[in-house]
Image (tube, rainbow, N blue to C red; front, top):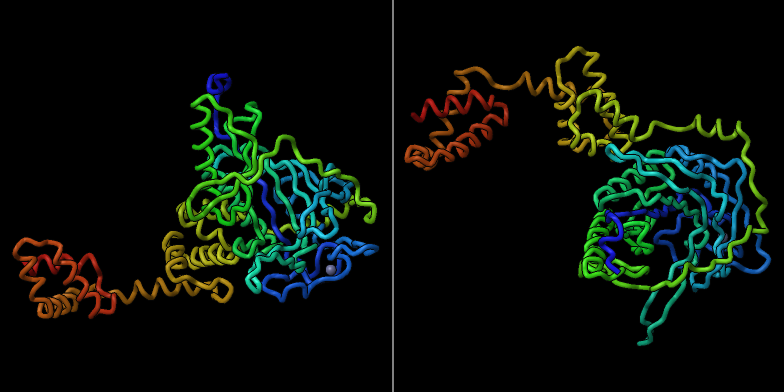
Length: 440
Ligand SMILES: [Zn+2]
């Protein structure tokens, strides 16, 4: 079969993103959810160890945050929802099943805007995290140990439609998801600690009937590289007339390639059924409305304001990474406008970024005042500047002779000296003109 003729091929990418919520306690028990770096198995109880007879009690905050997150992605909230058991065997899953959500997740549909495109959301649901395996060598023996501290930590999963068309778009989308979660203050989304985990489904078209799942991508760059690699690998196969196989692959960060982990002929049978220990959950309209009222400003809201202020795109991206920085920047620009100062927002933003300002400690108005006082202290007086130029020439005989012998760039050494003596206060335009005149 000639696959390449069968259909118009285009990169078809969907993402699955897991985010650990930073609730105080775990999803179904009172154990602390703050598990990172803690002594192994110190945060456990019969519920998260899956001991017989232990009863799970859902964490209200985790549910509230998942709904809020769904609202931020423009999702529909199901007024009737439930938890289900997803069965599979793995040593880090003591119950033999994971409590997750199957056919009625908390949130369905929705979209996230990336550039000019809306990436559609399939669902946002809530589940519990698993334990963690540690592979070690003890007394010359290879052993696998299990740490259950992470078992039962609330885990939110976001699934997209296969709408993403490039590796870069996937990266932009994932970054935006992290931003939204951080703006809502529901997770630190620290990928090194595993509190945000990325998976990509990659193919050259849904109608080709296969997709390759790339798992355990723990940085935005690995996500991008893995998708680029997969698209190329699959494309080469298709060009040879071979259909890529449906499989799960992992990213080898040392070799910069994806490697096959598992080939699945059919989709796994998880034997989902409703969790009998947790009654279905009803949300009243009032409850959802009250929750929605708590929605803070989102990245898009701040972005729109910054665009209105004509802040250049590359700066907007830096500022939006931190909600406090976004808030502070907007307040500072507004302050400067109120003072009737003719400072362009770009100058203010540059100053904020260059100074690596701590937005939570900074006082509104200080940046504007700093820029203005710097402006005022600039030396424009020709006599003063001439003195500085003279000093620089005396100190840089070599640069002077170089310049005179035709090495024009030697003037930058002289300029540097003027700036050093004047502590950066010499007017650069006037100084360079004076230098040129003096060296003629
Ligand atoms: Zn527990």
